[in-house]
Image (tube, rainbow, N blue to C red; front, side, top):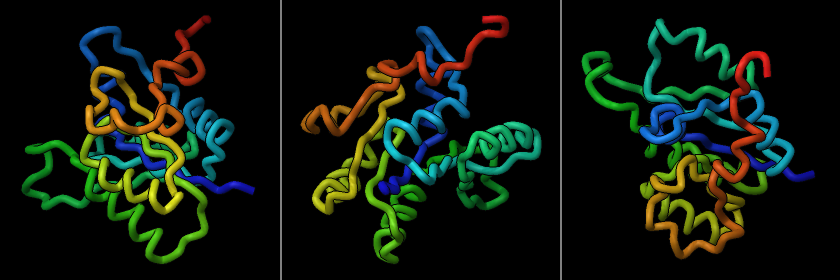
Length: 170
């Protein structure tokens, strides 16, 4: 059986969907988790957030109830609220640590359009540990990924209907 892991850059996902200027849309996290499981055989999905805030406790609960493993970035308490989450290095470290420890998984699915992951993606491809990168927004997908074969990426707008939050009553 295939055991793939997904790593989600939550800030990148949020800014490219809910907070985008043209045609914003909301993701149904439970539907996204099912999609990742069914389409990419994701057995563990890690959802990386910038930092913990008590006012977002219900959101954290929703993320966990959808089947994601929450991972928070460690911050100096004096810096909280003064800068964005920036979880890129945490995601890279987490993946590399799992490789180093020879954790039993097959391949990685990455959800982000951020070019900071390009070297990681290239390395995972070399090691046959890369499944796909899912770009939350076509316009925000880094040009660094242009040379990837189309079998290694997809745009979330292509499966938006499967993961979009449905309006009440529809």
